[in-house]
Image (cartoon, helix red, strand yellow):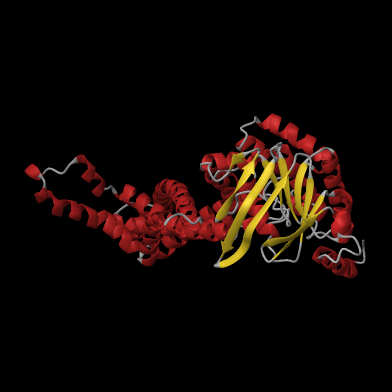
Length: 240
Length: 251
């Protein structure tokens, strides 16, 4: 293999990988957090005015294509802001409207977090529903407030139960981070595409990019398993 | 007149459109042990849960040392519940916590004790129920009898004024019942006020001052065991107990 090509390929892919990781890490964390909160509210018998908007959010993000969500966020929202301009004096939008014109990076992280959060919230909700009624009764009988019950009893159990599913979702996230390239964020897939386009060496380039994803996912899988083991409790899923 | 430590007054409760408790009243003096018996579905568990305000009674009120539960706000109800220990048929230990943390968690979160103080108290209570060596085990690693003893330790750590026990031995193998009953006997001897739903007639007869018979949501008979269970009493209670004894072969 031509060493110049190899050098170019690795340099571009490494740079792409770095941006990919910068997209994945915050999206995974925010997504998990959003998922835990949304799933908790949706699974704990809160009043309808809290649950319904969250159900709508989950239905929206699970019910539309991720690609379309990114397009809408990156290309659609600034258009919406433009359309609103005539309603303001001097056609100056208040600063708040700036959130409607996000950078490629910010749009990606925002959409991946929200989409991931919608899926996480289903895992968390299911896990909460599977917690035995007696756990809640015992907590109430000891004088726990609902919030204390939630944070000290429900969440530690639900997250353990949901963890394999949530881990699965994080693995998915790594792969759907590749969609960021459609809004010109030059992450791993985008970098591979530009190398391939300029060198016409599609086969080698995309095999290499695939290998990068495989390595990242293997590492993350290992980490998720380590976490699962570290928090394992006898009688809770994985036995020690 | 002496104020009873716990009084349930005219409690009625419907669940799912069905009347489960129909105007039930009872009271406990300090240090008393009363036993609820009666057929399943008679309202024993619901009564205990209403007394604990886990279910809010539709009608009637509960008084702990003269304070009315129905007049308490939500926050005070949490405090009210701390003063009444509850033991469940199926233990309800927190599955993700070790035995000692099961006991310590409410001390830390509800009573706001330091971790060290809570754990020290937890180990003390576990020792009291004979489980000092099991402190670091999880519920899944304990036998049924051990789990129930942990749950008793957990309730005792809150320094309850009254303990409610909802068939504490019904989910246990016959061989494990004894170890739990022994703990309850010790508690009774130490002067703990208790209201216990049980089918352990022999046990009830030896320890209790009053047997309360519940059927179809009402208290139909109540009295000292010697009276209710006398062979010639012709009471519903004696009849029921005779049937239980036939089944279980014990007195």
